[in-house]
Length: 501
Image: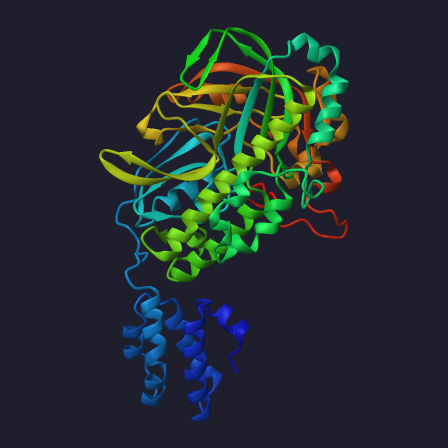
């Protein structure tokens, strides 16, 4: 008999009404003496068809079986009613590449696949691009009235924040030990880490959306416990030297030329974002069974559908939550030091926005890309051993007002663990006067592109306002890179996306 596991393989949507009608139809057919060998092919065809009623009329089956499955076909049709169905485009939407050095062939292929969707209007690939899941890291995709969960990514609202402190840089250099102790006391890194109950609180947890049913409500306790913490992989909190060559007089940042001590952080929405992404991506794939295998991770949700509205709400909550995490990290570290803040810059780089282009509202997905609208300030980091930059967007519509979100990898995590040595990483950092707390080989400076070349490759997208050199870096330690349990295997991570559980 066909069971739950079979329904998964046959790609039957996980919808109670559909499955109830299906089991009823199967029961009647079994009672009439029909076998799985006859019924499985039928169920499979109906499950993945954009027009199940039409398919049911055309297949060669006994009339009694056809009659049994009519209500199943109707439920499936109702489920997909009004949705845009994938079909191969005669002409793909246009996209443009910034920077060609060391961009993986697979990243280019993934961008080509993304603009082949019927919902796609255009795209761009930033100079830090490399392979991801669905949309490549460094990918920008504009769509019409649809959002793609995996074009936002698994770490929804992964973001940057830099605070410029009123501590003279010389004071930082004289007493690095104090600053290192503060990072150890006031930050937490890795899978499942938390602070003591009640030590980190924020008004974001009072948002009424948490009380709605579904994946957000299910992750409320997890999110509350992970407030103010950071993930593994490339997430960090660090002190460094900020060099401002000319006075900055922007609406959101006013600071004189000079050298400053700054605090920079990089992390996202932790386990909440991961669960929201996976839940809605799976739902999107159920809604679009017609997608070929190579496009499944690009399954979309129409924004005027309930599923699309639910994802958008959940994504925006993840954004508020990630912003709250950075706010808590900076408040805690800066409060412990007893210093003030001269100014700060922050931005998401894994998110989707509603933006206007040529008078039309588009959904702009930036997966590892920084918003760079005209006058918009952002932060583009390098690595633990290379500089980052405060940039100002030029509003280049060809890039959908975007720039890179970092340097971009040239070596996979697996290759880094296999080929690099801790001694070499320590030597590189020591030569540059950089102290590291935690950190893993897969984040060694050697695994990243030259950030200066990446910045040079997008001079038509941004202006550089300041340069940040990391000097004291805190990251997840080797033991908590993937799990607190030694025997637990690392999840497959072919696209080198950071899963911030």
